[in-house]
Image (cartoon, rainbow, N blue to C red):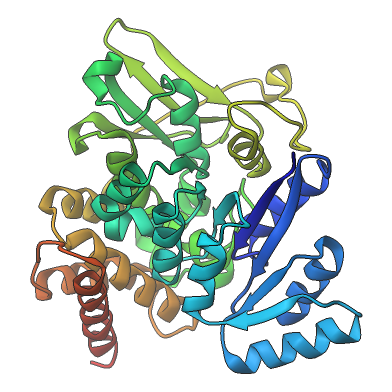
Length: 391
């Protein structure tokens, strides 16, 4: 029987890669819903190819545009819009699998909706765990959902652990989790030259093809900091059991170090279709379209420790994890504002971490009780960051 998939964030890089894998296996998967915030022409083309039952736009205006595009193509896909519609397609009984690939805090509610509906949840939206880790993991457990990480690093860790990854690390015999990082485009660049970095330079990742926001996060290594927090929630790992190792070749996607001295690693070419295919078919294996790894051609694998002076955002993430409460949500909100300002030439590259640090100092750390209070904290952090931008 075919499984039906809802892709939240279909026009982004993860969404496009997911559809590429699905297209290779029409005998296994159908598409129930596709969503996008504003790229209606792209979404219409995807609808024409995959014929989903539902398409969700970000706004009423975008939905009107999409409706016209779809009807011109002779498609009868139902068009809806907004956060409520996102939650509906994430939790609908007609959907078996949800790919949560909306970037940032905007994807939180629909990700939680999928978990509460007991779906097979493919999590590419790391901010959902960063902001609401306890709430999301509780929802997964209480509703017997299946949570499979899509970030290449966490997918690698999942593959290197035993299948029951909700158990604590000592029960696995694990000493440490080793998250690998490419180091981004500025790994070998002198720190005193980073003030002049342009958005075009920051998004030019040497190994991965990603969206602009996540590419900047990779350049600052905030992306890796968010992944440290994500690993904490996914695998029950305290901060001192999660190490970041810079690995420029991006061939080893992460490792697990065991108490007996063994280190298990997952290797592969840097292509997000590998973890997507793994999660879609889990516990089976299917063709992802990714070329087989040729280690002889790669020749060598290099590793080094990250420098917090060069990558202060990574240190900020470790500090936020240690602080607990709403600190990680504040970190994430401030980072989203800072990165957006940088991409729009309103903030210098080396000012990103400074803005985040100021917001973390200013916004009180609160206990996380529910989604409403968490979103209030998120909005407070954003307003505080925006206020600092105007100074």
